[in-house]
Image (cartoon, rainbow, N blue to C red; front, side, top):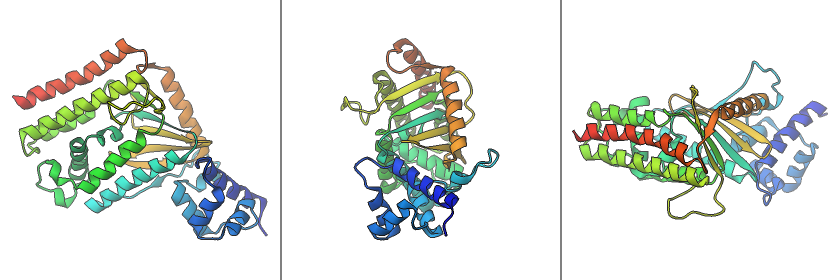
Length: 336
């Protein structure tokens, strides 16, 4: 005989899934397809007449990126995170990229959605708009952070990164461009990328001077793109085609140190928090109390920040001018 508490947890899980689906989707069909059961069997699970098995819970949580223990954990001192272990090779990195893309696809299915991004570093999604810059970031991560053996002794050239990796990166950028977002930056948010390029140049890890200069030019385009996006208060996929129905975008300048990259994702009534780990990997939790506390903290940080998107033209110009100045200093050093 099923207990009320077990039914309650099952209902909570299924309700979380429902909240992430567009209005046009059928929860019954989704459950039926994922679990490989008839629609009648799916209905029985939705009504609580049939309990989900452990294997079925695992399938659903994996598909919808939900931490099941977050449904029953009421201990504020215990929060569970989902984590995808990295294999220190190119295949493992491909899995990492595809996992980001799958998360974004799931977010975009939600009828209402928003990303709030506390950005100590430039959001990686923007790098992926530019093929050579995406290649540089992937090369940097695999060589300098992961120490992938096949990159040992190599100097950067975009050809070292496969077309498949770059294709996934473009899909990741396009998916992020579809999500309404609030980003909170500091004046040093763009610095880490510039320092990475500077480190590679000074340690002789570019094949050619022109490669380094071309990456700098794409960083300039990246800054210009984000600045234009902020001016319009809309997410963009490119600079020319601007849709009136483009997702909302807000950019804040925070004078306080953020300490880490932290992302809050809201999908209907469901929430998830992402933290960076090992420079670029992610830890994810859907723990309700933790997500709510994180959202409250973010709201407090936003109150202490200055909105530089929309009509804040002078503040926005000054903010990005500092980033361009840092980039100009690096370009001059490379040319000399």
